[in-house]
Each structure stands twice: as C-alpha cells, then as structure tokens.
Length: 133
Image (cartoon, rainbow, N blue to C red):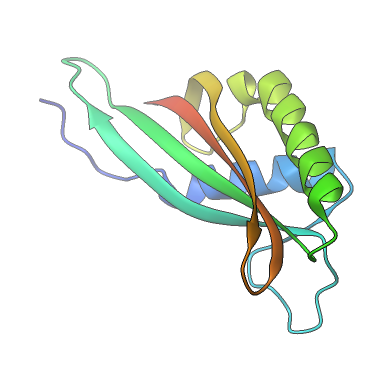
C-alpha cells in the first residue's frame, strides 16, 4: 500500500471550476451571491476513493455539477447541461489537476427535474481517474 499524503479534493474542484468558467457562458459560483441571476452553475458534492495500486497513488473521483434556473428554465438547464457534457467530454481526459495526471474522465449521470420551491434544477456527475505525479 502506498502512503497517501494528500487528497486532490480542492485541486479537482478548482480544475473543473476553471474549465467551466472558461469554456461556457453561464455564470458559475463557488459561493452564490444573494442577488445572483438565474441560470447559474455550482459545484456540488465531490467524492474521492483511493484505488489499490502497488506503485502509484490513484484516485477515482466524482464531482457533481449543479445547474439552477427559475421555474420556466427547463430549456436553459438542459442546454447548459449539454454544454457541460460536451466540454467535459472533450477536455476532461486532459484536465489539468494540480499535482495529478488525469488518466480518464467520463460523464456518469445527467439529470434534470423541477424543484418544488426554487424552479428547475439539473445535475451532472462526472468521474475522473487521477494519478499522483
């Protein structure tokens, strides 16, 4: 077993945030301002699981990306989810995660649904295999 010295939680979030900010036009927030205009994107939950490898540190990571819109925003949410899917499908396998090499990336699940109180919501779960460099 390899000694794990750091977890790429922050560096993965930063890399995905930067790719989304530079690669599409919908606003993305780390902390949503009170007067944020819909639609917008946020980074949701992130999970990391160390993989058993004898000679390297490998992580399987998933990151949820949320898209928020008002109650008439179904089309906007679907369009933004499509843009994010295309962006991560293209750039994901070479995503520059500080301290790691991205070995692979994929889109796992894309969902869109009405929220009872806030409007329309979409979520995309992307997976990455990261190797410590």
